[in-house]
Length: 229
Image (cartoon, rainbow, N blue to C red):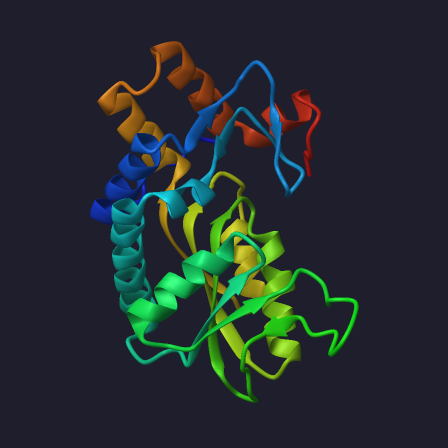
């Protein structure tokens, strides 16, 4: 597997978001002790998009770019509501819904154990076109769970948005398309690596370590106790 190239479809947005994430300290390098991600993959790098909630000017820029990206790729009147995935997607969905002037909902990972036992909080109705929003995606698999919850509640969900997409696991976007989900994103690890190297945010040794991971993420994960298939 070759190292992915920086995002080509939206280079200004990709570079801007990558620089924001680096500047606020949301990019973590730890090659000596692998992170085990929610998806099960082992990684020497970790993006903490939740950190953006504490930086108003940075998050405002990211949401501005997000609204533009979604409108450009899906259409200006493509959605009736925006839904955030519990929990990291909730603030992003609230900000994006506000900018896009749309109702907001959020989706639980599993039904709450009392009352209506609902998975969707907010008002959802049959045929409502919903944009799923989360902070990031590794291989994209967790998005299917949220999308299915929206569909089970009667909504129509064919698009998901994340601020950051790993874009290192082969076939991830194609697998989502099999479930009729198109995922939109602003920046990837290749974008962050390019900006980090250009801005000398990390040592060259650290940059090369990340580059080796990006060249063979499955092999790296297997060698460090993570998922490898």
